[in-house]
Image (cartoon, rainbow, N blue to C red; front, side, top):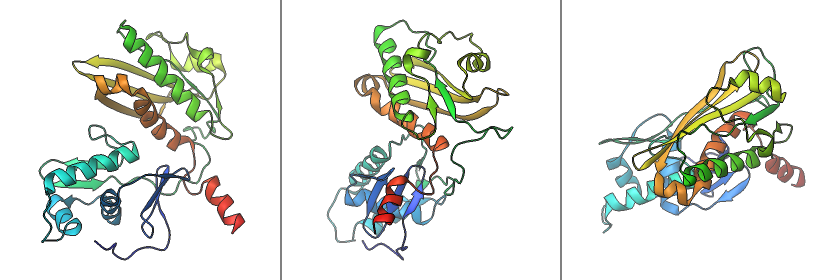
Length: 268
């Protein structure tokens, strides 16, 4: 397959950028491994964001008519590989949505985020945040450990955001009562926003709901829901943490340019 009408610049979405000329995907400047077929699918979806690409169309564009392949299996594997590279989820998609019986579409998201950090509705810059341990009714030791590992990793990751003050896990570890008032906790901790969530097990799945709340007026600045198979989440908790963090960080970090790109241009 040839890439149609290749643009001369990278396509940016969220914390990612894709270069159709080289078929390279980068996450905050760092190259992400992406198999050729997955890269072709990503470009086809990015070519017309918001529009459905049917499975039949993908088959025609990706595999010549004289190819002898198990198309259904190959396409499913390529979509799974692409989602894995993006940290995306079929159940709670941020980038690639499955339309059962039809095909797939790329979910349009803002491409031009000019402010450094999200601002609350009263226009206060969100320059400090506390990520509280998730509320959980389960006393299972594995779920308790999962809760701790996910929150710690989210804190570790967003603490690297320049100009953003993030409270350490040891500072917030005791704030996990479901009856806590986020705005009051935020004022006590002297932060502008608080991330709170609830994690629980339902049959063989783990579900997480998380919100970013403005301490000043209690409004929700961002919210999302995630789910995954219990056995997989317990084995790889960093995947749930990174998926959560990617969305939260995309709210707090500009996407028009990244420092790696700026350093590259200055050196050119």
